[in-house]
Image (tube, rainbow, N blue to C red):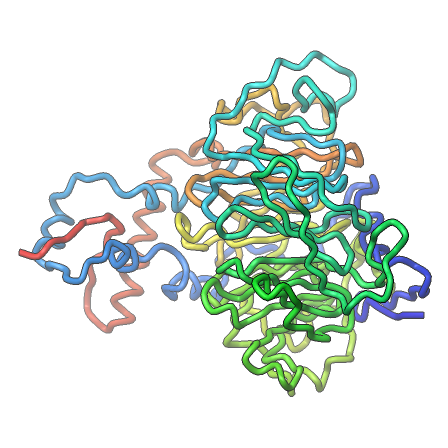
Amino acid sequence: MRYGGALGGVRVINDDQEDVEDDSEDDMDYAPPSNHRGFFPEVKEPQEAGVNLLMSGEFGRIGHRLKSSHGQKHINMYRSIRDRATSLRSPPREELASHLIPNSNGTAVACYSSNAYSGQFSDDSSFYYTCVQDFTLNVYDMTAAPTPPTPSRVQSNRRRRFMAEGSEDHQTTMKVINTIQGSPGRWTITDSHLSPDNERMIYASISPTVYMTNVREPHPEQIPLRFGDPPRRQHLWGFDDERFGIWSCRFSADGKEVVAGGDGKIFVYDLNADRRTVKIDAHNDDVNSCCWADSASGNILISASDDTFIKVWDRRSLSSRKPSGVFVGHTEGITNVSPKGDGRYIISNGKDQALRLWDLRKMRSNEEFEEYAHTTYGIPQYDYRYGHYPRPRRLAHPHDCSVMTYRGHAVLKTLIRCHFSPAETTGSQYIYSGSADGRIHVWSLDGQVLQVIDRAHTLPMSFDPSDRELPPSADGYRDRTCVRDVSWHSKEPVMLSVGWNGGRGSIVARHEWKGLRKMGNNMEDWAEKQKQEREERAKRRSERFNIPGAFEQSDESDEDEDD
């Protein structure tokens, strides 16, 4: 008999039960999530810690960083001052898009007869890919124009109204690069990831083996990456005859390694050597999510577990088998961890209905952590899969070391994911997450909710995603949608979200920025807001450098030249 769920109530699991129990009922059509928001104080004003982050220079688009990207070695001060006063050039595209947050309820662009567990853009947003419970992987070309569907007939079944004509297993208006039938595993594909060169994809299916495949070949080979110990025997049907399963997997930035997590362990696989190189007994419960902390060195690993803790591992000092530090703050299991990519900041979604932001410079040492590692602060017997979160005993762990906490969404039913907004256009100054209540939440770093997108009002596939936004239906019907994953385009104010449609398959919706009217503002409001933000930045900059005044540095690409 095995005991699990250290801080989410004790779970008793018999040895003859499959490890898929944690996720085997994720897609059942439960009642709508209960309203737990009254448990938490509403954030109506910017929080000081978040404002400090925004003004720290580590988030947002910084003028001198943009100029350095043009390879300029010298700046002519006279030309810079003159151009501020006389230049009529338009600001760069990144500046125009930096404050544009997708705000439409969306239009269906793909439908599946099974639940989709993951949907993400590639790093350059030229691809979009999904993994589905029927073990299919779908890869789409985002550089191609959408294909208008045949106008759908009026049908009584509400799910069918989202779909174009044809097979019900997979319908889309996006250009399909490939649909890959993955190797069968346990229950579903839980995670997938595209390589940095957009050529390979890995996916996990709650087994000890992660598979890697080519995304362009018509019938690609499924290459097994075996994270388990050498197998003693193989199951009759070809499945790995080991008990543990991998829940999460990620390529390294150079595409040469894979990090994976599951069953309390994290692993690293060397693709060139074709072998597992790292195995760490990291947690006391399932590792639901893992990642690399940065996009450069590949030395820092992050693991997040149902034991409520996030641990940081430095591969250069693994001989002690102890973490370099621990993030403490969640009181229930953690569903997802996502890095900013700078080796410093990460965010996590927790079953305690909190999204937390962490700074690697402020983590607890392992020695501190050991003093309270076995003390629980969660709700006894709490099971997040059933759509209800009781009033918690505590809002945070008493040794909470998170920098900021964001609330308002529902982390129920399944492993809801969260992400930083794109660095290229927004400077990662926003955070967004799916939600079990069918909504997408976008927060500013200062803690305020900037946008809530409601998937209950998503339009069928026969509509154009770029057309004007239609008013929500007045029939009072609300689909029981659960938004599991969301991805933000790296160059445009566009999101794609994956939503489970109440036990009747899943829908990918496209959300675009539909103008100021959707935000409840007009052009004068927008201009005033921008003016106030510029004045505030200039004030803080002058205070930092102890000077009586300061020019606001423009983000325009001045292309300064030497005289």
